[in-house]
Each structure stands twice: as structure tokens, then as C-alpha cells.
Amino acid sequence: MNPANRLAQASFTAGPAALLGGWLLMRPIDGDLVPGPWWTAAHAVWLAGFVMFGVMTAALRGVAGPVTGGWRVAVDAAVGAAMIGVAANVVQLAIDLYAGFTAVDGAAMRALFERVKGYPGVETLVYSAGATLFFAALVALALILAALRRVTFVGAGVTVVGVAVMAVATFQTGRDAALVAVGMALIWLGVLLLGRGPDAGPSLGSSAGIGTNSAGIAGPQAP
Figure 1 (cartoon, rainbow, N blue to C red):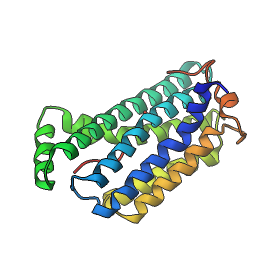
Figure 2: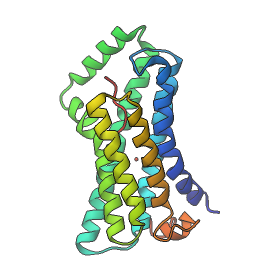
Figure 3: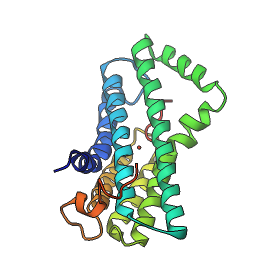
């Protein structure tokens, strides 16, 4: 199997698995600003996960295949937005890791984050709109691919429900709520179904056209 195909296949598992894995790694410190091994491990896993989400986004562009007109605009816009969202999360997580390595306690971490967010545009581009853009774009891309019959409606629906559950739980009860993990697990299942294409076949490489017509990665925010 072509290494690019293997990487694309792995991304549909590794990205959402890392999202949930990082959440679980934060549980020993209750999701708080506590520098140390749990913070570092969780954010390193999230960082790797969003890199894989980038690979997954590129693979989904391959799943769309050749499209023209308004559909091409919609697909490329969703893919571009997803990549911007991934970049925002990667930057955010790099900052989080730096804070975890350099701060001596939670107060020092909080002060560092406040300084970073004080720079013009950082709050919006990295920590709020930019960080959540990936998930909004993932929803849009899943629905577009379903409308194009490139993926199953079940896969798109589970993905959309997963994102919705995670978002509602986060805004209503906070990122530490168990329902957030349920949403992440649903995203994982939905993304796996998306990666299997319209007939839920075993080969992503054949349905996505990886290496032939594929194009060219918000997650938990630091407080």
C-alpha cells in the first residue's frame, strides 16, 4: 500500500482518537491550569491529533473527487476553512505546551495566556473563532459530501450530531463535562464512516483517490 494511503487511512482514526485521548489525559488535573506531565501529555496528544486532522481534511478533498461549478466552490471553501481551523488549533496548542514547560504554576500560566491574548487578533484568530472553525467546516464538508453522494448520510449525520453534542455540552456545562466526551466519541464514529466512502467499503485509498486526485487539519481551548 502507498504510504500516503496508509497515512490517510490512519488519520480518520488518529485525529478523533487524539481529541478524546487528550480530554481523558486532562482528567487527573480536572482540566485545570496545572503545569506538569498530565498537561504536557494531553496537549502533545491534541497537537498530534490536529496534525492528523489536517491529513484527514486533505483525504476528504480526495473523497469529493472532481467537482465543478458551485459544488467545487463549496468543497474548496469548506476544506480551506478546515485547514485554517487546524492551523489555529496547532498554534494554540504550541502556546499551551510552551506555557506548560515554562510556567511554575497555574497563576503563571494564566498570566502568560493573558499576555498572548493581548496581542491584536490573537484572541479571535487562535482562541475563539479560529479554534472552532475546524469543527464548523467539518460539519459543512460532511454535509456537502453527503449531498454529492461521496459519503453516506449516516456518516455525515453522526459527525454533525457529534459536533453538536460536544459544542452544546461545552457551552452549557464546560469542557470537563462527560457529555463532551460523548460528543467526541460520536465524532470519531462519524469520521470513520466518512473515511469509508459512499458504500462503507474497506478501502479508503480506492474511494478517496489518494495519490491521484486528492488535494493538499478546534479543539479544547486553554482558559
